[in-house]
Amino acid sequence: MTPPIIQRRIQPSVLELARSFPVVTVTGPRQSGKTTLCRTAFPELRYVSLENPDEQRFALDDPRGFLAELAEGAILDEVQRAPELLSYIQGMVDDDPRPGRFVLTGSANLALRSDVTQSLAGRTALVELLPLGIDERLALAQVDDLWQAVWEGGYPAIHHRGVAADRWLGAYVSTFVERDLRQHLAVGDLNVFRGFLELVAGRTANLVNQSALGGDAGVSHNTARSWLSVLEASYLMLRLPPLHRNLAKRVVKTPKLHMVDSGLACWLLGIRHPDELRRHPLRGALFESWVAAEVAKAVNNCGSRVRLHSWRDRRGREVDLVGDRG
Image (cartoon, rainbow, N blue to C red):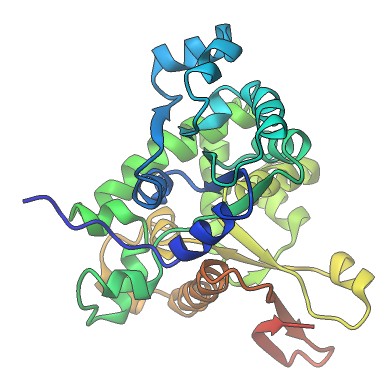
């Protein structure tokens, strides 16, 4: 029996943007459900995956010919595999700016975001799809155990296909986090990078100290800063800037770090069962990050412009999460 399609809360926002922009670009972490969302929201558009070697080769060798076959529009999946297409799409939508003509998806990285904003500025709406929120999970099945929910996290495959969370997350770390990110960052020593990831997970819901993090991982301050930036651009972690009346100080002051997916954080910390999480000394921090991520997903899914911050005064009093609506 085929599992039901998960209805994503962000879909109405995506459809609304497609009525105004000729291109909609959906980014987010790998396996967050971008392809399923786009194919569900735009069944009338032809679907082309650029992870298919034949399609990728065609797009790279003859971008004009490739796009000529898609003149009426298409979903181009994993467009970062052929970034040169973006400049050609720019010309096409300038000549024919019909809204909703192209839908692009890509596993976010710094290069893709730069390419999209440079080539399609003013022509594309950017949408960020994060893993499932608790409301989306509840649409599939009842959630009776809080720590089970925190331990499993929100990657759709775990809930849609019923894959054991620890097995799926182990494969996810091995294939994407260790392979793709390692190649993107040109990391030589896998053990050092793996140790860095575990240290980041162990610091979830804490202020970011890049020098201390780099020192504990055995890498320089600049390397730690670079690796954190890529983890953030890949939607594996988020940083909450401190709320301050002086806007400049929001940038300078130390932000708070949260892992976006609590299940991934648990796996990196070696927590292999919900009962282990119930007794774990970091359960409070993991719960705080789970809540922060749930709020970020809810804000993101409804297209809100609320900016999330943390707040702390000189006496150590703090508010974990503040939504700034101006």
